[in-house]
Image 1 (cartoon, chains in turn yellow, orange):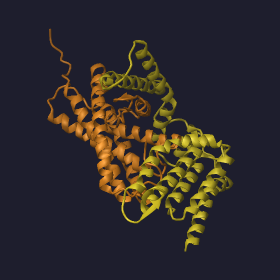
Image 2 (cartoon, rainbow over the protein chains, first blue to last red):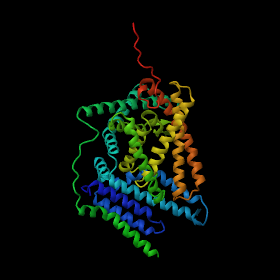
Image 3 (cartoon, chains in turn red, blue):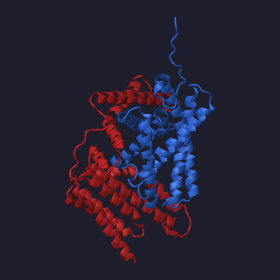
Image 4 (cartoon, each protein chain N blue to C red):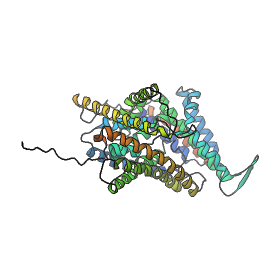
Length: 239
Length: 224
């Protein structure tokens, strides 16, 4: 799983997500199938369930949004315990939570089994414009440098007794943002000059892209194909 | 917090994906002309800056805090073309590396924030700059106008997408009221902070502010 070429993995992930979005929530059996496919993939990729769960927490705000939905709306009403809920709302909420969760889990598996650098290389092979890939490469390379810079500025402020408590401190924080920008930009200038002096002419050195054997494609695409099969079978059963 | 997978239906997501791709292509072309050289490092560090500045917390009241979105700020500092590229890269990286925002919804988010937010915000900034007196102190004020507009405009973009292909059952007017209402408030914060930040950059490195072209007098050589 970790060895699969990244562009193949990206395609497989997108394919899988598209299949899940295209599934109507009424065929709920399909979603259980998708979840099983995801868990098997995670198992094959040796990603601990705990990591998977922890990183999926990012989805929580939207779950709140979805939970409120059955309470507002119109149409058929169902009684669930002490609440009168709208049927359409329940279905739509389930659909949003199910599809959102599958999307997040897929993205988490993709990003845990692939290094950031590899994901960029994959996107490049999938014809993301070279300029965008370069911007992203620089962002990855310098994001820690710039956040360290920000951290040092924070320590400097705190060591002078500053504590941001409210709107009255916005001016100082905005100044921080401004000097962070100036420092980032100046760093960009220095890097650019350094690169020019080493012969940079708008392109980064490239590795020859290797041919991907069909077997690798088959392995990667097996997950979304199984999902597609599940979709076809479950909708077939409905009819 | 970005749009997750499955929140907007597939045809709508695909359409906006195509629009976003076209917008990025145009911005790539524009950026090549506006930057003197093919300067990926500068655009890259701008993207890094936006990513970092979104982690800077601004306390509001009673323990709540917010952060900049930075679209208008980037547009005013480095120009709308580079700002679009930088913001799009940030969104792509957030989706691919942190699962923040659905992969299939990337086009929707890029359209709202990197295209609508940046360009409408920058347009508002230009309009305000035209109306205000031609002096340095007007730039932060115009920046506030641009930043204020950029936030609810992105929210309206989302509501538009929701109206076309939303899968939730909230009525479009409810979503419109909720989204625009909260984002007007967020816009005020964005406006104040952007304005203060732009004025701080102007104070020390006015040459780095794309939206401020000082009326320079050419070097004059006088005879002795």
